[in-house]
Amino acid sequence: MITLGEFYKERILTHKPLTKKKLPSNSEEIRIGRDLFGWKLYSGKDSLECRSEEEARYLKIFLEAGLDEVRIPKDDEYLNAILPELETLKSKIDAIINSYLETILDKNIRMQLKHQVWAEISR
Image (cartoon, rainbow, N blue to C red; front, side):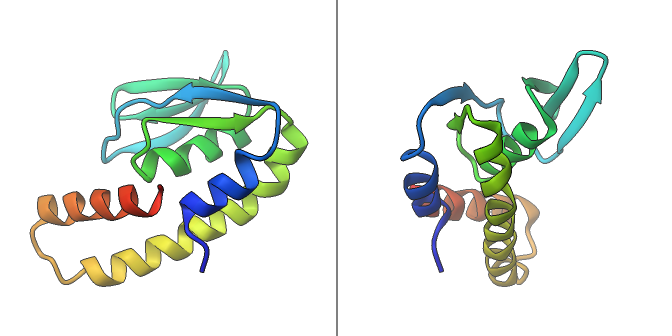
């Protein structure tokens, strides 16, 4: 199976033009919301404005993976085309990681290990 880092290098970084966004600090509560001004990605009390729901979903994947900044395709059609594949990949990786981590009872240790694993496979 392809890793998130490989997908990012092969399918995102090779597509131009790209824009770079700094992600908020990762918290346990990550969600997407909409207000009067558009879509936002929330991480705890921090938020990041997004140009569309698709961009917010894209950024959420990389925020959950522990990245602090990410490049985004400026082409909305391309972003919409790769997003389902990226979300499926993220779900499969999450399932594998969680199957190993479910035996660790301490929540803090489990979260630390999950973060370390994501950091390793996001390279």
